[in-house]
Image (tube, rainbow, N blue to C red):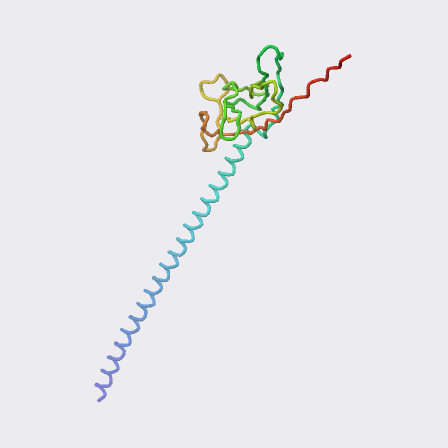
Length: 207
């Protein structure tokens, strides 16, 4: 009876030992899974932080590029100061409305007098140098015209080309750097209103 009892005890102890080992194995396994899950969560958080940091750096870089783009541009739209150059009435030649423009740095420029959906070139030099006033013809005026037909003068600007005999510079933004044609948007643009009215003819005093 005693032997049977001890055998039973030993069997129970061995069985309990197996249970303990299995329990420990489960605890270790669960701990490993929890550790793996924590590592995965930490990696996900780290990846998200890296993405957020990259997006923030890209946003800051874009802000800096836009700031440099504005700094390198021609600035606010100027008054082009239209003036009418008249011809004698008996000459048969129309009068001409002229404007002037000055730019703060060297640019390639294309200019157009615009009315509605139509436009016409103003004969401006392709390369404008910094600080020099440039005169251009906005439109021809018959003798009876009192106000401009053109609504505004459109100036389109680009950095100088490599073939231009000036110090080359470039805008750091991703807008087109090369000059285009009448339908190509400028790297920078001005829309200068054309505001002028012909002064009244002097009164002739009769005696």
